[in-house]
Length: 387
Image 1 (cartoon, rainbow, N blue to C red):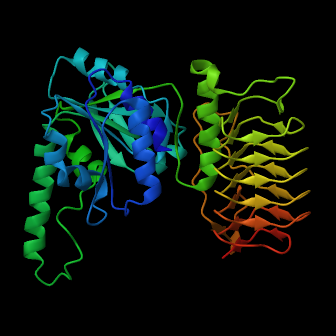
Image 2 (image 1 turned 120 degrees about the horizontal axis):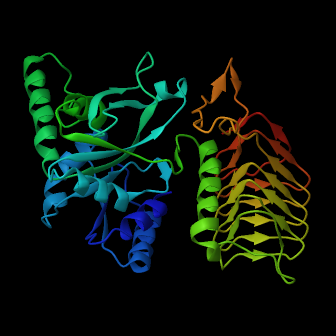
C-alpha cells in the first residue's frame, strides 16, 4: 500500500526525505522494503517508531525535530490507509496561489450525503476554498466534501498542535486520580486541530475529482487494487501485462511481477495483481484478486475476489472465492463501506483472505472465508474464520 505513497512523494520537486511514522515494531520485511524503495526512488526513507499509538497529530508532533531538521518550507502528511492519485504537486501549486506562505491545505473529495457521515466533513467558502467549519464523523449531515487524510503543512502547524499538547497536559494535572493511561501526546489532527483552525483563515481545502478510497478492511484492498491498475492503464501502460502467443490470456488490467511464472494456458483478469515469485499453473483462472509473493496456484485452480497470502498453496482443481464489497457503481460519489466483520451473529460475506503459508487441498472450495496464517486445511469451508 505505502509504495504508492512513496512513489507519489518522490515525484514532488525538491522532496528531500520521506519519513514513515508508526508504532509497529520494525521487522525484517519492512527494512528490506525500505532499502529497495530508497534504491528505486532515489530518496532517503526512514521509519520512526512511536513508543505508543499517539494519534494522527501526536506522531508528527513527537517527531517534530526530525521533521524540521532539514529546515523544510513545507511537508506533506499522508495517512497510510488510503489509496489515491495523490495530487501533491497540485496541492503545492494551490497553496502558492493562495499567497499565504503559512496556510495549510487538506485534500477533499465529494461523497454522497449518507456516506459523508463516516468521514471528516468540510464546509468551505466556494470562492476562496477556506475551511469555515470542520466536523469529524458528524451525527447529522454537514457537507458532501470529505477529508481525504492527505495534508500539506508548513512548520507553523506545530504551534497549533503544541497548544493542544499544553491543554492536554493541564487537564492531566487537574485529573490527579487518573490512571495515567491517558497521555498528553495523544493528539488527533482532525478533532483537536482542524476543528479549532476552521474559520481562522489558516486552513484551505483542495478538492480533487480523481480517485480516492479508504483501505479500512482487506476487502477494500481489492477495490484499491482495481483503482491503481486503472491508473496504470492511463499513466503507466508499460507496467501492465499484454496478451502474447507465449503468455497467458489477459483480460482487462493485470499486473504480473517479472519474477512470476505463469502458464500460457492460464486466464487472468480483470483487475489482478500477481506478486514476486508466484507460480500459476495450467488452466488457472484468476479474477479481481491479489496473489502475494511466493504463492503457488496449482493446475486448474479458480481464484475470484480473493487475497492469497505470501507462500500459500492452492491445490489442483480447488476454488477460492469471495463476495465483492464494491461501492454502488451507479453513484459517482459512492465510497466503499467499512463493513463490520459480523452481522446478526454471522460472518459478513466479503472477499476471501488466505493468510501467509496457508495450504488448500486439491478440489476443495473455500467461500467467503478468512484463513489465518500457517494453516493446512483438509476440507472445504464456507462463511468461516479459520483460526
